Length: 82
Image (cartoon, rainbow, N blue to C red; front, side, top):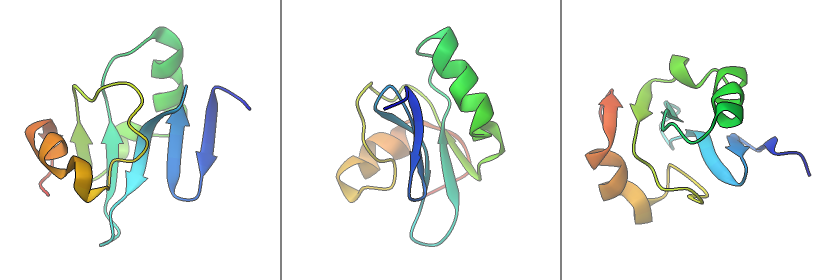
């Protein structure tokens, strides 16, 4: 498996979700700075163009649209609203 991959509507870098789609169709992008390589993956996935941007997301988060992480995501908003 590559360090950057897409599965369904999600994009991952080293197993951490960097792009996801909410049930209403809006895209959510993880702009957290992890490494130079992940920054390249975020650029390839066009994360900066997402409707909602979040920062300070811990490594290993498997999805950004999960109700389980809703409070974390709301607390980490950079752009947009949930």
